[in-house]
Length: 257
Image (cartoon, rainbow, N blue to C red; front, side, top):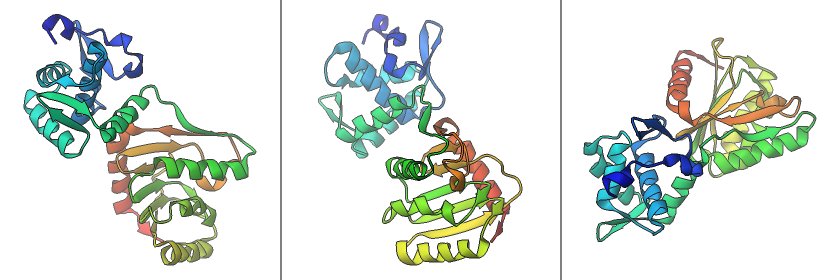
């Protein structure tokens, strides 16, 4: 990619609008993107421009740096994404592998992403099914952190759909309904589904959200009340790290039930 071509007009790439910001006749990658994300997007952009599979090593490096990332990071990140089977290198050309394409699609899918799911008022039964579908589709890690200020035994029901996948569920709450019944449910989950559930109480929370791996979502209503009112489940990936820090801070200072 020569210097003329490097002055990209990324606005024409509608798939990634919002991920790059104009700056002095060039672009900088959004700070919500990791270096891995930026390198994968660099390869994607180069392939789109050339209309060929594969990006030249030097072109990918040049674009990665021009998007605001450190030159010293390039080789380390390249080694990582090759080791993780996201791409392969052949004769100084970088090609996507299936795993890398899936990762790229997820990155691009974050652009302008609005509700993951919309659950309408009056759809109580459907609401639970939609939430279960959301869990099956989005939960990639075996640990879930749930912040929900109002919980009951019914809060646990949707998580049974993650049998064999979920190992730990940490719930941070303020109000517990049917306390004794909830304790029985927690014990049964561990016995029947091999899921360890721990619940802690604090008075410092209000918002409802769920964290899994490197992803996070806000939940418009308490899980036990899904379907009572219109509810949106929205992606919060851009604040995942700070939200997890907040959860763990509240978790460590909270009391067990």
